[in-house]
Length: 180
Image (tube, rainbow, N blue to C red; front, side, top):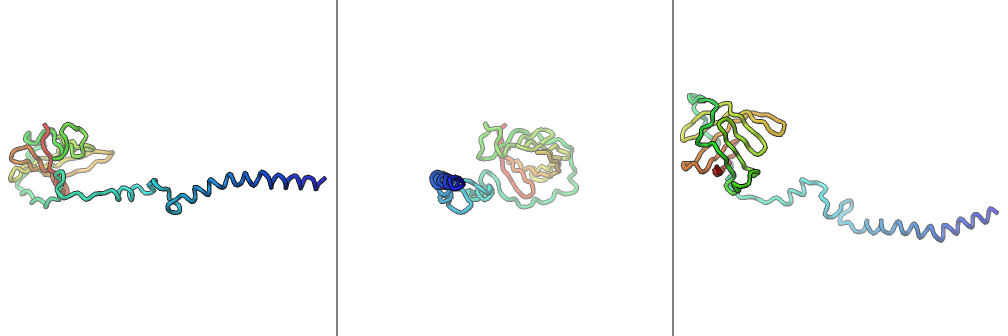
């Protein structure tokens, strides 16, 4: 009786089990053979930073009004803050030179009120405003944005026509056009 069971089990293994095993393993082997590189899947970014860096294009300096600025000469110590009100000549809404004024969420969006500088993701409340030579305006401001707070000194250089405004922040100058 024991021999019959052994033969019956062997028959089952030989006939159905091997074909079942092959049915499971063939698709897995096919998938393994399809990959470009071992461990990688084509079209899937495993490192977003590396993927993004492959698509970076060099932008010529000055594109959209951004450029490195020479450090501005310090304002004479005799120039004291005249208060915390930003002059009316620079108040209004500003956008990047190549941006549309109709788009209210552009990267270089800036709204200047009598007491604050409102950027796309941060707002600075003016704590001191000084006037320098050649129409420069220095604004000391307490900023908040994205759950953080910091203090910053910005220099504003309005153009003679008042249609453009260059904002210098940490050695980076950005020129914007007046929208309103």
